[in-house]
Amino acid sequence: MNIIQVYKMFPTQLDCLSHLEKARWKGKPKCPYCGSTNATPMKKEFRYHCNSCNTSYSVTVGTIFHKTHLDLQKWFLAISLVLNAKKGISARQLSRDLEVNKDTAWYMGMRIRRAMKEDPEMLQGIVEVDETYIGGNDRRGGKRGRGTTKTPVVGMVERGGKIRARKAKDVSSNTLRELIREHIDVKNSTIMTDEFRSYLFLSKLTLHKTINHGETYVDGDIHTNNIEGFWSLLKRGIVGQYHKVSIRYLERYIDEFCYRHNYRNCDDLFDLTLSKALGV
Image (tube, rainbow, N blue to C red; front, side, top):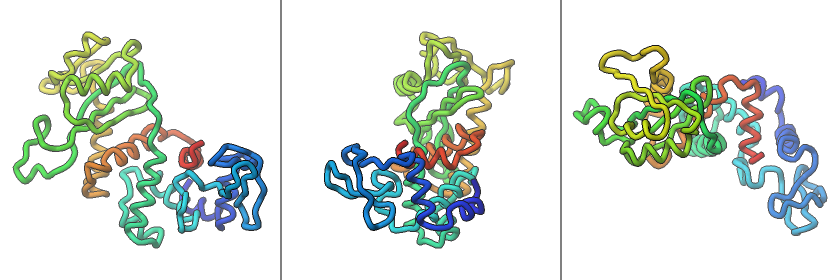
């Protein structure tokens, strides 16, 4: 859904609230504090009094919209802008598009990224695994690639399926083994990597095939081109749009890029994201 469609479908705050209630409660308000459906509508529209725990609530309680002072239409527009920006959208650009200050735009972006974090789902089949390094400036004389002081990020992509990427403390065998066991069904997978020594343990876990990048990048079906293509997009987004991100929030940005990749063929990504934002 683009911003024009958002304007047409949700012209007022009440339209936005009504849509959220349908998405979260399907017409029957449920107290977010005690779970009771015994509620009385209050004079203030779209707010309810729980007759079980004697509290009042609205549909935004416990969601990314909780305690916001912005119109929900701006939130809906922000979600649309983030979802449609293949390389990401900076807080400054979002602030200009929504006519809010930079700090507010950054806060909105981080809350939306929180909704993009997915529950772990085991990858299987042919899975490509690779690592990259983010941060710093190589032109200042720092070492590139393995051995750099940059932050390592490990990625795993199921061919034709989803991708998982996580910030890592290092790229040792122990760290890679832990991440791979967490995200890949090794009993039902064939894992493709390059010839990095830290991947040698994989031959004891599952079928493991390697590609020697010093000689070729593709050998039949053995390659890591899909995950490397994702790294290219992620780095272009961070360098070109965000310019820099703090290590503290790096994983939020990684989640954003993974989410757009995983649902790139979803016909109703806007409503899916709203459902996740509501905790449905």
